[in-house]
Amino acid sequence: MLTTVPIRSFARNPFRAIDEVMNLVARDFANGSCCAVNAPAALAVDIREREKEYLVEASVPGFRKDEVDVQMHEGVLSISANRQESNETIDEGWIRRERSTTNLSRQVRLPEGVTSDGIRADLSDGVLTVRIPKPAQLQPRKISIG
Image (cartoon, one colour):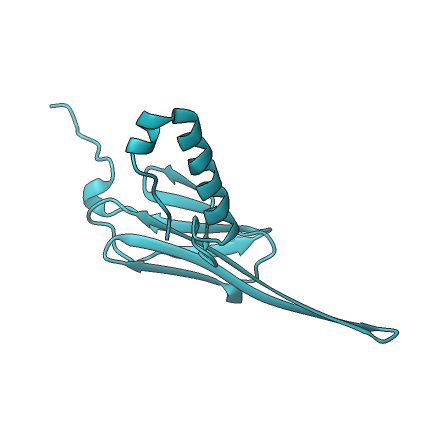
């Protein structure tokens, strides 16, 4: 929980109040209360609109297909990538075991009327490409001049 400093501290001695705030920030940072621990990092995405589809590209370097999840629910495209690694080394009596977890995720609200029908996803060279067809009502229509 973050700590607050009363405003009246600023009125009495602004420099002392600033020093108090800096100490509180340092303490909160040190004990981890200033940020979410183990929260997924934001996944970098590029979104393009083409004539007949939306194209979403996400950078997921080093992830395998089975570590990436793509879902669509109520007009929101959700992409997540999760990887757990373990490395154990035994050398001349020393034993070292390290574990790491990488979680990336991103949600993108799609335009009204887009459905999950026909969505395709491919993973190649660390880039996830999701192709989302536009509904007929959102596609451009040629109007003839009479």
